[in-house]
Image 1 (cartoon, rainbow over the protein chains, first blue to last red):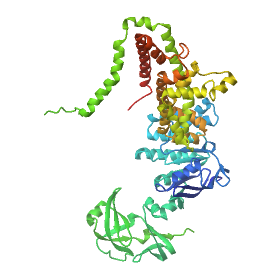
Image 2 (image 1 turned 135 degrees about the vertical axis):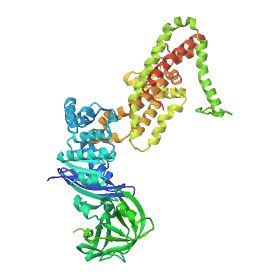
Image 3 (image 1 turned 180 degrees about the vertical axis):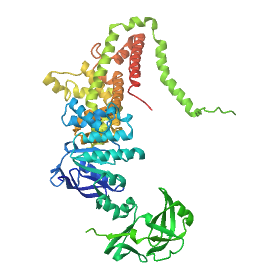
Image 4 (image 1 turned 30 degrees about the vertical axis):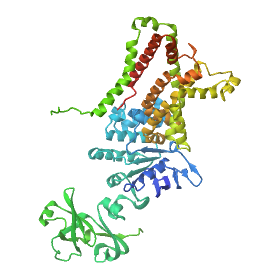
Length: 355
Length: 265
C-alpha cells in the first residue's frame, strides 16, 4: 500500500495549537474523530490548502505541498484533492450536472467531455434523473451524493470529507452512510473523514485517529478503540466506564478505597473499562463473593434506548444500564443509596502506556 | 370602547409624520402632472432638442454605468475579499463623491482631466484627447458621481455572499480568476444588478458635475437635467415637459427592473 498522505499538521491560531501527525495509504479510509473544537476541521483545511501551516509539512503522493520552513505552499486548486464540505456548498446557480462537471472543466476537459463525465458520476450515485435540478430542489441526502460525485469527479488522490452525514436526518443518514461506504471502498485514493460521530467513524473508516484539544490521544482500528479507550472522551464515545489506576496482577487500584478485579493481568499504570450493561444494582450488599462491589448514590436517571441509564456517585462515578422492570422493582430514584456490582469477566484492564 | 379584532394599531405620533412625509414626496410630482401643458404636449415632445437631450442622457447614463461596472465591481471585490493596510481609508475615499457637492466634483475633475489638468494636459499633448466639454466628459462626470452607489451595493452583496463557495471552487481546481467569473459573479449578480440600477439612476439625474466639467452644449453635452434647467429660464412649459419625460422614463425603467432584480424585504 503506497502512502498518499504524509503530514505533520501544526497550526497556531489565537491560543489554539493543532499538532497532529497523519499518514494515510492508498485505498485507506481514516476517520479523524474528536469533540467540537478539537481541531478536526482545521486539520482538514490544512490538508486542503485552505489553512496554511504554521510548522510541519504536508506531502501528498510524494509531493510537498506545504512546508513553512522552505517556504513552499501550493494553493488548493493545484492540490490533488477533492472535498465534501459539511453543508456541501453546491453552487446554487448551477444544476447538479454542472456542479459535478465544474471540477473536470477546470482540469481542462471541454464542456461536452466534462458533462459526460459528470453524467457518469451522477449515474454512480444514483442521481442521473436529477441532473437538471438546482441544489435547492434536492433533498439533503441527494445534495450529499451530488457533493460526493463532485469531489470524486476530479479523481482526487486524497478525498476529504467534513462531517459528511451531520446535516442529515436519522433515516436518510442510515441510507447515505451505507452508500458512502460503498463509494469509499471503490475509491482507490486516500480518504480522510472528519466526524464527531463514532458510528460514522466505525462504519466508514479502516483506522481511527482521535484528537482532543489539537492533539492525537488515541489511534487504531475500531475494535481496539472500542475495547480499550484511553481517554474519558473516547470512553463516552464508545459507551464504556473508564478508570485509570495502578495494576497488580488481576486487581487494579483506582481510588483510595476501591480495587477492581479483572480477568486480564496488568502491572503499573493501567486502565480499567466495563460497559454500563455489565453493572448490576442491588438494594443491599450482594451475597456470595462479589469482588467488584461498592456502595453508591444515584445522581441521575435518563432513558437510553429501551433501558434506563443510571448515573451513580461513590468512590468513582459510574454509569449503569438497567431494564425498566428492574428499575421499577428497585424503585430507583435520585439520592437513593444502592450497591453496585460489576462482573470481573466483563471488566477489561490494560496498560495505560501503549506498548 | 370597541376594538376591532385584527386591526393593526398605529400610534398617531408615527402616522402623522409618515403621512406628511409621503405628501411631501408625492405633491411636487403631482404638481408637475397638474401643471403640464397637455394640449401642446405631442408637438413639444417631437421637438428635435428634446429628443436629442433625452437620447444623450440615456446614452451617457448607460455608458457611465458600464464604466462603473468595469471599474467598480473589482474595487468592491478588493474591499470585500482582500485584507490590506489602509482598507478603511480606501473605503472612506470611495464614498467621498457621495457627500461631495457635485459641482465641487466637477471642479476637481477639471483640475485633473482639464486641458491644463494633471492628467488632461498629458492626454492632450500625447494623444490629442480632450475630455472637458465633450460627450465623453459627460460620461466621466456621471461615472465619478455614480460609482460609489455601485461599489457600496456590490461590496455589501459580496460580504453577504458565502465566501466558502469560493473555497469549494478552489478545491475543485478553479484559479482565483475563474472562481471570480464562474462562482462569485453569479452568486452576487442580483446585488450587482441592484447597484447598477442605482448607479444608472444617479447618472441619469446628474447635473452639477456635468455642467461644470462638460458644459451645456445642445446635442453634445446637454443632458436632460441641463435642458430642464435651461428651459426654466425661458419657457416654463418646456421645462415641465422635459421634467415629465425624465420622470416617466426613469420610473418606467426602475419599475421594470425592480421586480426582477431589486427584491426588498
